Length: 126
Image (cartoon, rainbow, N blue to C red; front, side, top):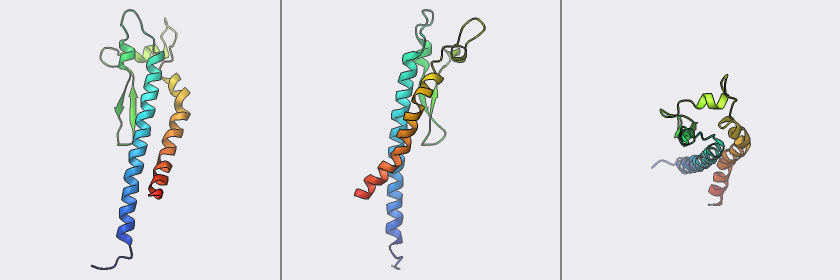
């Protein structure tokens, strides 16, 4: 076998640290998304008519790639989420979606930005 000057070991280590970074960042995204959804559900208005369908429709779905999450409000039963969020001529807005996101955005960004560094430090310790 030809001597590659330890290149294969370095490449294996880089692949291993990449997997750890992706895993830690994914956990941080999942935790943050769950926290944001819980806050949104806690402030979502519940009308006597719908029995909380809007609140129950707030959920997290996978994003376009492995390190993205999408928070969605509304479904077939609660297709009126944007009218509740932004208001109508007859009703004032009830900021159940963007308000909690603005409140938690810095915490989410900090958690997600710290995850790769924590994975690298853990990798360096062995």
